[in-house]
Length: 253
Image 1 (tube, one colour):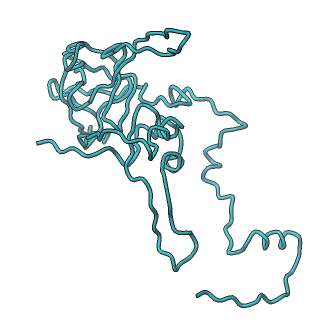
Image 2 (image 1 turned 90 degrees about the horizontal axis):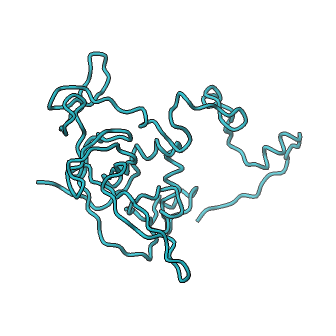
Image 3 (image 1 turned 90 degrees about the vertical axis):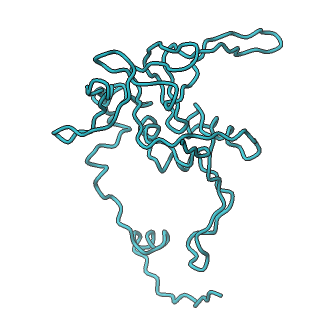
């Protein structure tokens, strides 16, 4: 019996890696906080009213299109997902389509939407759609790839038999975690294109920009010494100003 959950609360690991952005920044980009208690007042407990579940689509969580699709005034039909224990599909994998008009055909995974259990296969499971239509222009018809569920729509291809197979994760003698075909016991390596992000195709090919990129040694070096003082106190210390006045006592009720 399959157990399904409604939508998703968190961005997938592959999405964070593809964005090449800190996970904290992505969270701030898509979260919707409607009200929360002020920070710095111990008499107020930490509490907030915020959106807990989001409808993930092909638009990435840090974009404005994602915010529009998750507007509080937009009501959409509920989407139920089958939880996946360990993700096994990556960009660049060869898979075989198991459903639809392209059933039995093989292709390369071009995009992964982990939050919806989706993969897109190059040139397969396509449909026609019209874009740019208005009063004076009939629009242009383009061929667009539709997503496929990894639970029922696709299977990985065995590199030895070139047939669809189930896989499981195992460890090698060196301690590396690999995908192994249950049909032939062959290792299915993770493609190099899985490293691709918005900024580069491969980590080894990325060239650092001396002006903009932070060096690895600078990222671990502590450059800020926190002190229990205000901004005004720091300015006074740097200018050699000493404060001799005694502040008036204040009380909290």
